[in-house]
Amino acid sequence: MNTNNRNKIKAWGLSIFLLGSVFMPACTKQQPEQTLSGFTLSETKPIEVPYSGSEVSVSVSGTLRGWTAFPMKEWVRVAKEGDRLTLRVSANESARPRTTEVKVSSGGVVKVLEVRQEGKPLEFTSQKDIQFGQFGGNKKFFVNASSPDWTVTASDSWLKVTPNTERGEILIHTEENTARTARSAKIEVKDLSGKVVHSVEVHQKEILYYFLPYPHAGASAEVIRLFETERYSRLLNQPDMMVNFSQWAYETVSPIFNYIMYSIRNGKFVSATLYTTNRDASLLKGEKGAEVIDFLRQNGYEKQLDVLYYNSETNCEVNIVTTSRNPNITFSYYPEQKPMPSFDRLPIGLTKFCRVKKVTLPDGEVEIHTIQEGETEHTIFEHEAKLGWTFIPPYDPYAPENAEDDPETRDRKRDQSSRKIRVPLFFGAKQSNPDHWREFYNYMVFEKDGQYKAYELGRVYEDYINDYVDPSHPFYGQKSRRVSGTQMEVARQTFKNPLMFMYEHDGYLYVTKEFRKLLAEEGFFFDSTFDRDRGFIYYNPERKIELMFRFGKTIYDGDDKPGVVIMQLVPRDIDLGNR
Image (tube, rainbow, N blue to C red; front, top):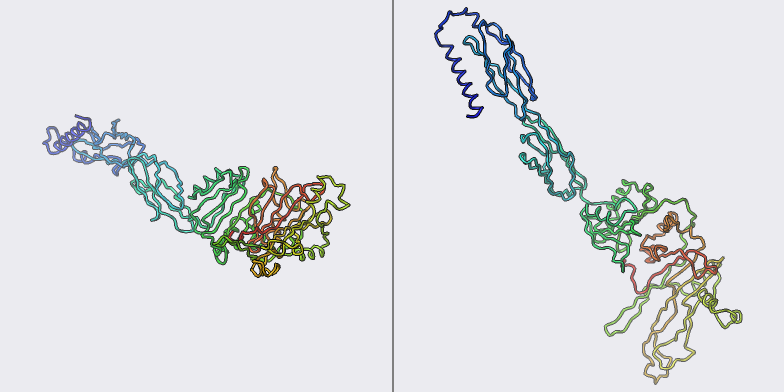
């Protein structure tokens, strides 16, 4: 028989004995009535004991006989010392409160002391903050509770909680947050009395709508990959070291910018471009455009121009491009620079470039269409003469002044001078008449104060009726095509002072803030670098022209000193409107 059962039998026996003694005839001389009824205890109300246990002293008075006390539960022990009853209550290791009685008997009279002990406070340790991404999901976290007697509730309906009190687990589930604001809720753990003993803050990120690229320049590709993966982006392209040397592209979950391309130069993040979803330019205009600008301002970007913003804390420049086939926002990071010399305006000259498109017909014939007229050799002459530039004619190695030139000198002078092409007036005749040949400049060079300008001119064509041969000739009267002249395709200019364009930091070249502003004012936006990052390409989507400038030695400088060559061009056969 276990101890609990023995104690219960003892308690029952004592109760029967005490009750029986009340109704048994007295075998001895009866005491006065007031003595029996005067048996009192100093405590009449329930005795409240803390969970940690304690000793409680109760005085017993008004009895001439001896008295006894018996606890009904073993967690209370009693001790008799004269007229004092000491209750020793052990600690309650349970979170549940408990109650028992101590019966005091004297002279056939039984009085009851009620003992109430509070439960042990719930000791609950767990994390206090949980983060969910935009798409939500399930997360399980473990708790360390002193008892399984606890409940858990969530403050908002979007947050579902499932407790497992025996295993000390709480499963949290959240749905996707489709709002543009983050949301928070609270999980509360309560004990049996309903008292909150622990709370957990749950935060869920908003939908990825407007967003910034990785916020720190110089980060590695791996750091950026982890950053983009965390916001559910998917890697689409990375350097293959054959064609792509520096670009990492990700597909995002944003409904506004679904594509971001990072440029990582020499292992360090230097720029990123966010492309609008479906290449929709309206997402950067009107009310949507105002939201984008407000978003930039909230993140520390200040307006420089309508399409140019700058964050002075991070030295990051933002270009907003709405006019190209690929509307985008480009973030470019630059090291700090001191104020640099600059131009009054962007040093570009003639910008009327010839654009020629070739069309191959089903029969294999090729048609050449001039889709944009460019400057001719005559208009170029007039323009440079007004500006005071001197034309350098083609180099003639047989001229008396060049007779003593060595091969190296001849090559240099030829590179620094203009050149012509010689073309017939007609095609198709079996025999060409020398009178029907014409010459056009395909390369024109000008000089002023030790600086040079050079223009590349491409051929343009015209259709004509071949009447240059004898009427009996089979080609007589047939439609043919001939070179009608040349027009500007590329313009170059050299500059002696590289600091007007770029500055050096840790062995790398960067475009100065002053020159970047001039570029933006004229509608040019950063495109890429070339020549091992010593050259830069900017693009004007409205004019559909590229502006390239490179630091290095130039063939136009007789002393072969480092300078800058700036070049404007429109490639033939490429419709830059499709960029």
